[in-house]
Image 1 (cartoon, rainbow over the protein chains, first blue to last red):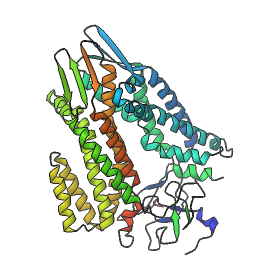
Image 2: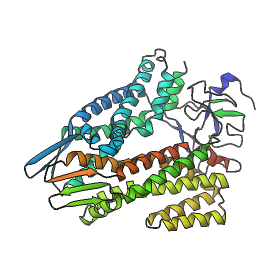
Image 3: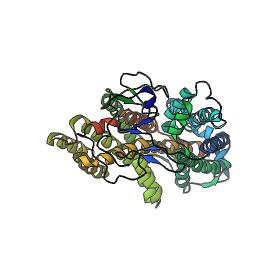
Length: 205
Length: 253
């Protein structure tokens, strides 16, 4: 079977199981699934671009603030100590200092980089301008970074640490703890908003 | 639209689909014209990469469970906890919920992941009908690490999923779960870091991370790479002829 080159743009291949479909017109808030493996193929949302940029900017600010402000404080016998994300990363020293770098990468640098790339890619699209230079490479990198962005996992880690400590000492929430809580909600929300197919098709110029 | 007879895979039509942006290109095209990703009809090296990362990951997971994860120094004395020991300690103090989170994230998920990945890779190589010999070998391995009794549940689930062709959708789901959930194992490393940063109360109490944290983090990273190396399209190639989905829906593409 042969397809004209223009025709290929109207076909969609399931990335999970390789079946080929003619890309259907999907209305906003509807989803197109692969009939064989049920992977979501197309899931457009109205004004998703604007909302994604708004959420990405919010998360960026939250990450920056959550990094420097203390998120938990501990007190026992009149001594008080508080810790920020930076303190947390540098808890690993000596042989383990590789982990300091890894922790910083996973919970600060990679999430932030991913969001900056996403804003860079989406900003021209929502204003109906031509895509930014190297936008494709930027979006590819941003997508590759998704599994390595672990800010929300760190937030759950805070909760576990809190319970572990409650026997040992008094524990207080710092301002950054609430920032992290908000961050988890927003990250999950923006993941549901994003339709990769729509972004790629609008990037092809 | 349900899955009609004429729906074929990209490979059967002489096309290669982009796994990043879903656009098909003629077979042999090196890069996707829409998104620029490298195109491969099937990743021929997929299984080798899966096994390589899997082995390194497992090699790190063993010391991660033998060395202490956390060293707590209080006025009373010093205490080192391994991952499992720490969770048992929590449970003994009545913190069942947190103990469960730790156990699920640090034991159940990594172990389940090793098993599932291995099962998938074996299933692709040897067809979903696993031979008796392989099933036996799998079982021996499982028995060897029987301390984590939940693993048996996983293996039973995987074996039964692999043996039935109809269950291919489940296998794919399983793969997605493995790929998504693996990151959550990192939580224990973060907990150790948080505790160590926080508990610096001079003479009263200090907490320092143990050597296991490094091995554990490495194990998580390597198994994440292993899961990402797996080419899920290989699962479907092992099914002879595309079967229609059981409940085709109207809105399906």
